[in-house]
Amino acid sequence: MSIENTTSNFIRNIVAEDLETGKHKEIITRFPPEPNGYLHVGHAKSIVLNFGLANEFKGKTNLRFDDTNPVKEDTEYVESIKEDVKWLGFDWDNLYFASDYFDEMYTRAVLLIKKGKAYVCDLTAEQMKEYRGTLTEAGKESPCRNRSVEENLDLFERMKNGEFKDGEKVLRAKIDMTSSNINMRDPIIYRIAHATHHNTGDKWCIYPMYDFAHPLEDAIEAITHSICTLEFEAHRPLYDWFVKECEMESIPRQIEFARLNMTNTVMSKRKLKLLVDEGIADGWDDPRMPTIAGLRRRGYTPEAIRNFCREIGVAKGDSTVDSQMLDFFLREDLQPKALLAMAVLKPLKLVITNYPENETELLEIENNANNEEAGTRLVPFSRTLYIEQEDFMEEPIKKYFRLFPGNEVRLKGAYFVKCTDVIKDASGNVIEVHCTYDPETKSGSGFTGRKVKATIHWVDAATAVPAEFRLFEPLILDDAPENEGKHFLEQINPHSLEVLQGYIENVAFKDAKARDKFQLVRNGFFTVDSKYTTHEKLVFNRIVPLKSSFKL
Image (cartoon, rainbow, N blue to C red):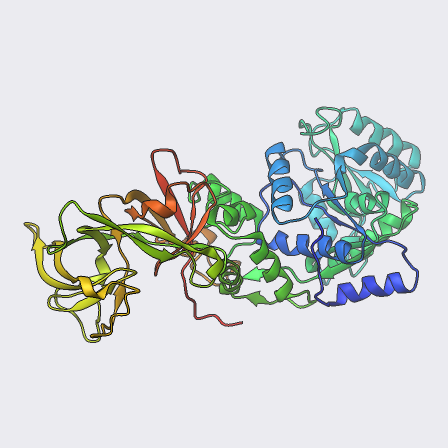
């Protein structure tokens, strides 16, 4: 699927210049997630950028799984990532796994050893940290650094053959322990991990480190522009070193951009996994999660996410985006699409005492106020209805214009009704409101005899369908969730989910299916939940309220 990307940014300018000057005849980008969790909205920015550039300049984009850590990776995550990319509206030209290149990577590591550029080291993790030095102090050379090429080749072969335990030995690049860039101080290339890999099984017990594997993967695939986030900027000299010293034919260019940070949002797969493991979130697709799966189940649209990612742009400096900005684009996308319907989330019974008993009429109500082509539908109306509890107040506060004893309001698409009486339970709670209606005031009749100050919505009690409504608030209370001074789990909002039992009109929802989207009058945009909805029970997730204070 070709999706245009017309937003100018410094990366796009680099790509355009490389094509104009003939440096590249075709651009090839890649989206390279590690399959150790579900993708989140931060990944969506990278997806839109990489695929968007390739689409615009008629290039290619590879989907590559950086599966070099068998302990944390799983085919479940592989499949979820594929689904997310396609749902966002993109398709890859080639599908690769880093593990496809394990033989090639091993060969290149042997080449480094033969060139005297790599050695097997026996230091423990603690010792290696001590020898590494600090940002202000140079590191110290490992006692193993000057092993002969023959000894290193033998030890590395024995590592591959499984003769050593996990952590007993590693292969390190031999670069410069005095470098001001701490990443260049003899980084680890391979470590031992006796673990079954989701793709290669038990063929390997040594696995390449990301800093070694990634540049080789890019070079093997002839990636022209390797786009990554700013935390890898200090790794770029190492990236270039591996490409050069491993004598790769293709030379990719790494370009860094600022990652997406959003208020009230966590952009860490490790922390998101913790939410799932601790049972705080109802799985990776919990509608409160910033995962693409969660956003999809919540009811967000791929169009809104793509437009959001393009609007925030691509920059070099870190910044934090208001999470309401995404909701702005969501409302923009849903307004002309979502079917307008009525539902009562906190029901209060309303009886029209002068309406004929056992009579039902069908009222014509518009399907979308923002789209005339959506047409109208016929909604049942009878003597007994449900209204929202907040639309009645026995003792109204100042400037309260909805229903109260003696006051008259319009029922949306129907008639004027005036409250005449209330029925209470033994505890004094109002459980039923009695009204009279004026048959001359039917909507569309042209009645101009008098005006009312409020219109409230309703559902017909006789035909309404019971439903569960799930309302969400941000899962993270703090706008700066990466704050190290506060434990992450202390920032969880205990009131992030409210579950209500109410009613919906049967006409709009009789054929509703998972992920269908509706604009429920005055209550917001909702979607049919794909996880808990059954033939016997409809469950709705509120995607977003109707209004926000945010302005673009």
